[in-house]
Length: 73
View: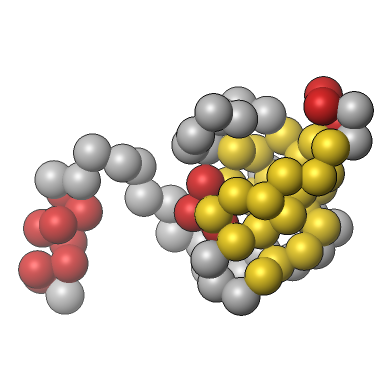
């Protein structure tokens, strides 16, 4: 555990921990990548690595991004 905390302290990326897993229908914000700052509805959770979002600003475009790129609002 100490080694894990050490790695987090020196990580260039912010790490967000969530007590409850994300679920379809929730509103999330993109925190990394080219869509950073946009908010959308979580439509599908594909395993542990990808999420599909509905983003209004893009004309209800569906985008697929890594789950680590979003946080719950």
